[in-house]
Image (cartoon, rainbow, N blue to C red; front, side, top):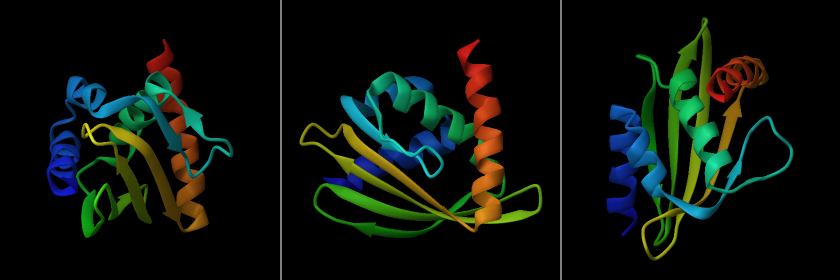
Length: 130
């Protein structure tokens, strides 16, 4: 099951289909940001974060380089470069029995990368709110 769900995620990352992203998220999904200290709960806020992250991180340099699956989840490792800063990160995704994402956690390194993504995500979220 995780492999099919993960393929849906990869398809979103490649195509940036906002409707597909909305459809993947459970209503009670929880998002854990590398820069926000409290979990972000609910479909609307998680959608805003993931759609923004797709625009901030998902450029030509973005590449998934590792994949670790469990029965209802995956940890996928990515790399990218933004403004000359090499970013290493992981997405930790959990799905429910209906194939909907119930938890999404992002971790980034190094600190320079976290600071850059924090800055760019803030700007992108402001644009999306308008």
